[in-house]
Length: 283
Image (cartoon, rainbow, N blue to C red; front, side):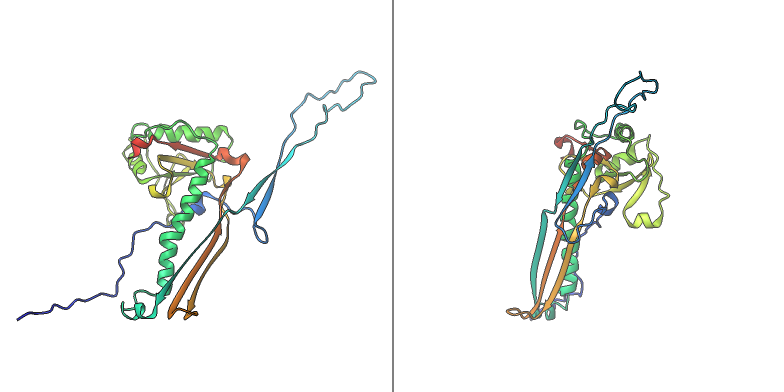
């Protein structure tokens, strides 16, 4: 006698692993795009120092302070380029026949978590790496040289007069393993719970350390040290909607739109140090 075995579907969805965004640690929102799609920022030059002409010959004309020069005032223009969207529908029977696992709200949260956030992160990190003020020659990182390279990076930022507090070291998981194997590195793990929740895993050489998946960073990424003052990363619009039974659909229509961008300020590019590795070394 044949027996038909029953198949049971549990009220559970096999979700993908994903990493929360750490973009807010590395960037700022100092400029306001409200009511505008483009923001212009002034860059003003300075004047050189002179020897004050205290004892001048009689009848000398001009300023004792030196030759008067005009300051140059140029502008940097930042126009938002990324205006992205998505849409999908969920049929009423799909909800009913999958033990309500295909819900519009949970599907929207999944879309944001697995698609939107990784895209914004990848774009922002790419802009920062491409416009870094310090980009030394690619070098294979090892457990023996990783600390020396990080010290050299911080030294370069020191000489560029980048603020010492607030710097962030960004590493991929493979490089973090090298750091843990390096005998010269003793990372402080006494990090406040609020910073741990934001993704900070330790502190090294006065900078916070965060770990970012390699697939969100450019190919050949080694590490980056950045101060958040260098990169402006606005999100002008983030709009998500769930329409119930719209015309032509028996169920839910989900729509989303996000308008964002990232810009590295010209005078603050030196606050980003980007060390690459030969691509063959990372494969």
